[in-house]
Amino acid sequence: MPIKSYILHCEYQNKNILLNELQKLTNCEVIPAQNHEVIVVVTDTDSEETDTELYNQLLEMKGLKHLSLVSGFDAK
Image 1 (cartoon, rainbow, N blue to C red):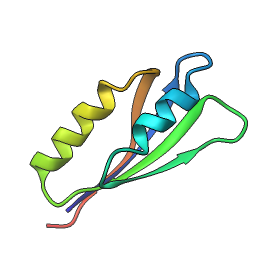
Image 2: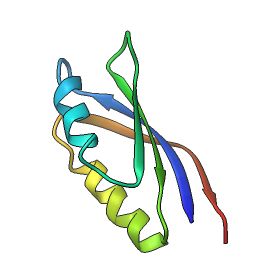
Image 3: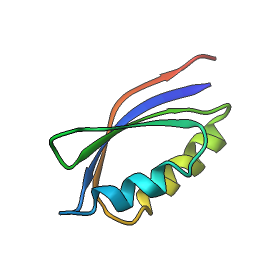
């Protein structure tokens, strides 16, 4: 069960677009910063395959400028 956290940096003035896209995803919690163009996403998936699919979905999000993995944990 991989659990990972990411910081997503938004393109200028595209935070709301990115938030709307992120909130459609399953297996993750979305936490927007109140005063910056960044969003924290914590993922919790049931397999490495699902984790990879979710990661690829994150990379393709509209409004995403940069994605940074902050922490990862795999309880095998």
